[in-house]
Image 1 (cartoon, one colour):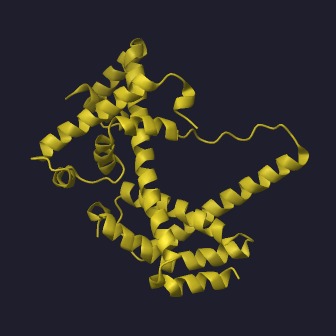
Image 2 (image 1 turned 90 degrees about the vertical axis):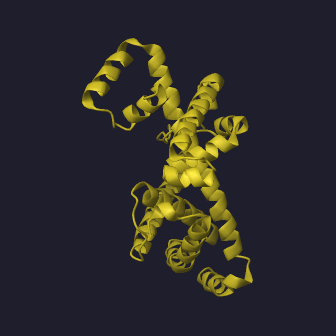
Image 3 (image 1 turned 30 degrees about the vertical axis):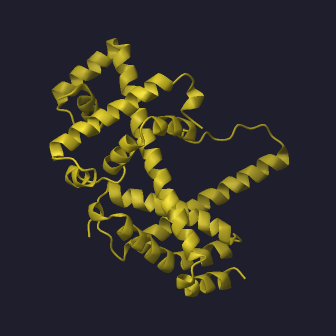
Length: 178
Length: 84
C-alpha cells in the first residue's frame, strides 16, 4: 500500500501495530540502558514521527521489514539523548560555562500560532500537500475543489498568504526560532 | 508560471538550468527577491512544523489509549513487566 493513500484511520492502524510490535523491544532496550518507561514513550513518539516523515518523503511501501527500520531510528534517538544527558551532567559538575553545541534552529510555536491564527484552513491544505504528500487529486476531493487545477491555484494562493503573513510578522529573529 | 510557483521550483531545484542561472543572477542584485525567497523557505518550515504538531497530537492520543484502554490490556501488562 502506498503511503499516499493512507488516511487517518489507516495511519492509526499502522501506528497501533507498530506500538504492539516494536514498542516492547524498545522498552526492553531502554530498560537495559537504565531508562524509564517515560523515556521509552518519548523516544518512540519521536521515532514514529521521523519514521512517518521518512516513508512519506521517500514514498516507500509499508512492509513488515520496516519495523527494524523504526527500531533503528529509536535506538539512534536514544543514543543521542543519552549522550546529551551525559554532556549536561558533565557541564553541571564542572560548572563550566562552555557553550553547548548549537542545535539546528527550529521554527517557534509562536510563529506557527501567528500564522495559524490568520488561516488554519490554508495551513491544513498546505500540510496535506507538503507534509503528508497527498496528490492534488486527493486534495481536490478532500477539500471539495471542482478540479485539480483549482486546487493547485488555491494551494499557491495559500502559500502566498502564509509567506506574506510571515513577512508581515517578522520583527525579530526570536519570533522565528526557539 | 506565477512567481511563487517559479520560486518553489527554484528551491526544489526543479528549474531548467537556464532559468535557475537567471534567478541566481537576479538574487545577486535584488535584495527584495532574496527576502522573498527567505520568507518562502520559512513558509515551508512553518507548514512542516504544523504538520508535525498535528501528527504528534495524533500519536499522543493513541499512546494514551494504548496505556489506558482495556482493549490493549495484554500490551500494557507486557510493558509493565519490563519496567517492574
